[in-house]
Length: 209
Image (cartoon, rainbow, N blue to C red; front, top):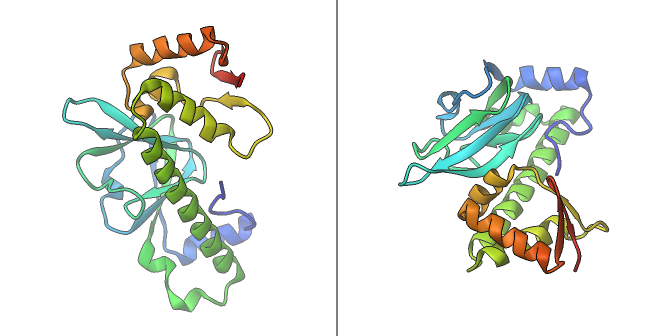
């Protein structure tokens, strides 16, 4: 996936952040950081650390929406995180840089080459996020846990030579991401392994089909 500052030098990155009138907030690990993201059309950049976006359902359970690491972006233009149903939780000590989207579309910045690269990267990221959202909808529409797992593995190895899947989540988080019961998912993973369809080594899953 594209990163927001791909092909932008550190010097030009500093100029760009000043140009866009950004603000940076520092948070300790394990903190809920939604407050700075409440405004409409806000983009948050994970400058340091990593965060997880979760949705709280009516049972009080937290459903993982996505994780974001260094230089990844999040904000109300991608998800309705200003809604009280969503939380952003730091997974480690983190810094979040906030940009108002209105500053990004400022016509007076067009003569800066690094601004053009920034906007181009942003559009690529928006495309990738829309693709991920459609994939998530496809996964959640599967009727059984088995089909959700197999489709997830298929998506992770699509257009790749390798048949290895390296989980970005713990297995508990994977169950939350797929919207399934953790114990039932473990049983299905065991069945898939017994049928020699997959091989599991910690968080590495190798497809055998």
